[in-house]
Structure formats: C-alpha cells, structure tokens
Image 1: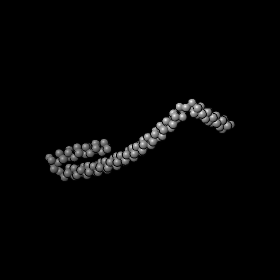
Image 2: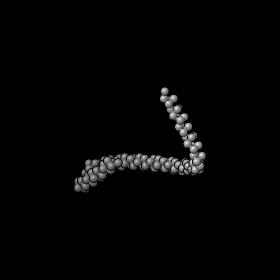
Image 3: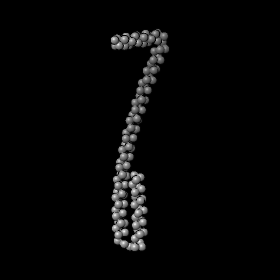
Image 4: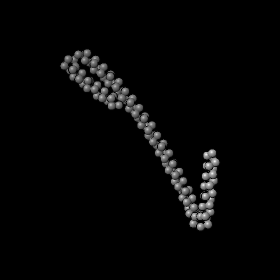
Length: 127
C-alpha cells in the first residue's frame, strides 16, 4: 500500500516536471510523455483501488469473525453462570449433609471405600 502511494507521488512529481517543460517549448514529444505518465498514473491508481478494496474485504472478514467469536463468548458466559448455579446448589446440599455428625462419618466411609477401590483398580491395571 505504501509503495503504491510513493509511486503515485513520484508519478505526480514527474508529471509536474514534464508539464513545466512543455510550457516553454510546447513540443509534442513532451506532451506524449505527459500522456504516458498520466496513463501510468491511472494504472497505479487502479492498482491502489484494487488493494484498497482487498483491504476493505479483509477488514469486513475480521469484523464478522470478531462478532462471531463475541457471540460464542457470550454463550459460554451464560453457560458458566448455569454451571455456577448448579455448583452452588451442590455446595449448599453438602453443607446440609456435613452439618450432622452421623452423616459426616458416612461421607468419610464412602470416600474411603471409593479411594480404596480406585487404588485397587490402579494396582491391578499396572501389572
């Protein structure tokens, strides 16, 4: 993009120099040079317009992708709120269970037996 801009500036400068040269002499050769420079300048501008349109399409694509990802993140945030509510409910239920001494002992026994079974399964699977 910058290269095309510099090229266009250079072509404008050379057109101005060529036009200044034709004022004094008025030769047709200088006029042809100016016309060819103008054609080159138009080609450069067409190339610049193509690059600008490509850049516009890229930015539209980036915008669409960003909006899509923002929608995904919003949905994920809503899902996380649901998970937080479920975990809060489970935590409240555990507090009720653990408040009673007999229920606490039963929970320790169940966790201990579960740990023993997992350990036994791991030892057997290792052989």
